[in-house]
Image 1 (spheres, rainbow, N blue to C red):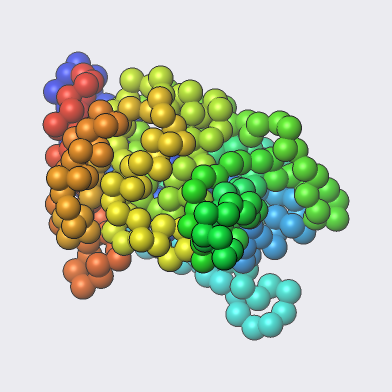
Image 2: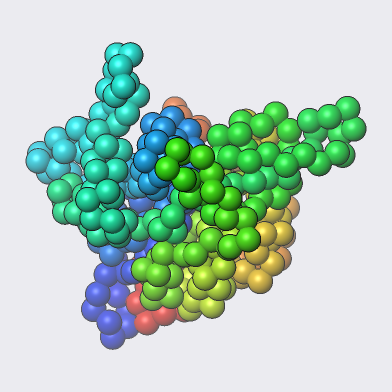
Length: 344
């Protein structure tokens, strides 16, 4: 573990909350576990593809895939923990009913049905895997993402609305803005609607953000994993009002579909459009992923942040974060913003 050196009166680990989903959140969590044992992952619940989408449609449950990935990233690293983590991530092959399902998805789904409480279900899985930290859903009910997209018609400025995480993530157009809707289904797996009711945050997730020393947003699919957290009213208010240092970690490469052609500073512009009241303390980016550092520094400053550029990619993999390098970069960024009694 990279040394954490408390400088104040509170002799406890740094309390960090990371918001996101998918592989981006996994990268953040693997870096954070090198800094502190007190990590809470707050995970998006709008996935509607693959194994998660099938379970969501057939059972009306939270999509478990992103929750599974976060749990695996924080699982114990001893022999027993590694075995369970491997099994947890294993996908069934073949062509039958189980084909494509991950063991962890099935386990989470079973606990969700038996316990009826997502937070309790995830706590039980965390105990089994020896998780250091905590994994929480962004909301206790599944959500749908709807995006305003241009570039799909002869008139390049014409706006279409596309609904669903997979559809938004793979659109050949350019995503301009997203909204969230309640994604509950009826007994036949069809949407119940819910457009009139705003999504309701998981109370424990709100508490975690308000009680954190540090809150991280990104990396990850910008419109489908990162920004959704800002569109849940209670979570949005918690992010705006928390006294925690707030850090944005930018992606290494633009994502086909969602952010094709986006510059690093464009990611921050979109963040500001969806949460104009949000102030940020630091923006962390890979130095080789930023063509014009001065533009990024200007965009970061508009959010109240300082840009921190360093080499944080894995050797030979320009599209993958190196956990140790990211951890060092996060530590350095936080040292630059001593807002709390305790800092790394």
